Length: 307
Image (cartoon, rainbow, N blue to C red; front, side, top):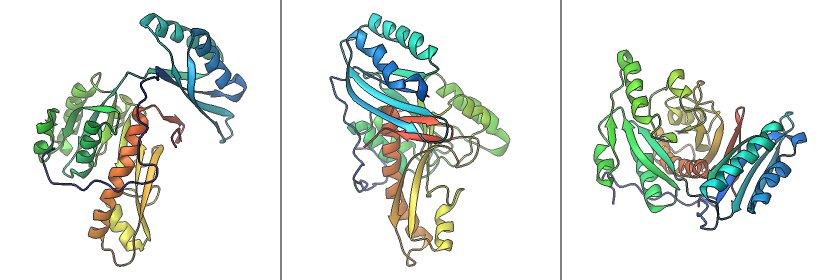
């Protein structure tokens, strides 16, 4: 059991369970490109001659005027290193010539995640539990915090905890130290209530690979105290939003959202308590989907290939 304050397991939502890994899946392809290019036919033309069998195929026509198709395919096979090389060559030749962007991910790859956190530990503790139990198919490689408060929660699990204070006059130094730890060592980053704004320089190193949980139903109530703003507005629903981080605060592509019904009887403190359950569940789903390459970003919009 992880050390620290006890946090209740979040209430299950209908789509809360992540997709269980299947041993017969060899890999997956995520691709997008012009509709005229034939994204699906191109992917199949790359896979089938090499003996791969399509197990799952999700396609979406993105209706934003761009005439773009998005696709995610899971496939089986008995690939060797040479097989993966040949598959990559086929995609480079066929998909590349047709203006299709693509990525191939072996099913055995487990993404390495860094969690950045400040003083509130409810989201961090839930992520640790989900990864340890296999509910989220990713590995927490390290935790970075601008405070030392949560070290006792993390260290019993054997995960490195790096305390890097952040002050106004040393923010650049702090980010340089963070990047020394992160770059090349992790595949993506989760901001689990990390109450600092990342600089554009930092974001350049991890494009579409930094997930934030915002304790509000964006685009409503951005910023640092959405529960107070929600109480003042008298809303009847509060929520949480998991999104990719961009230079514009709380305005990046949205991955997942969840809500909780409230009333005029709820003060900001009670809203905060109720919202923590939503935050944990929303972020758990978003991290799981990102880890399984179920999220495709086009502009400021996401396509999420999940039930």
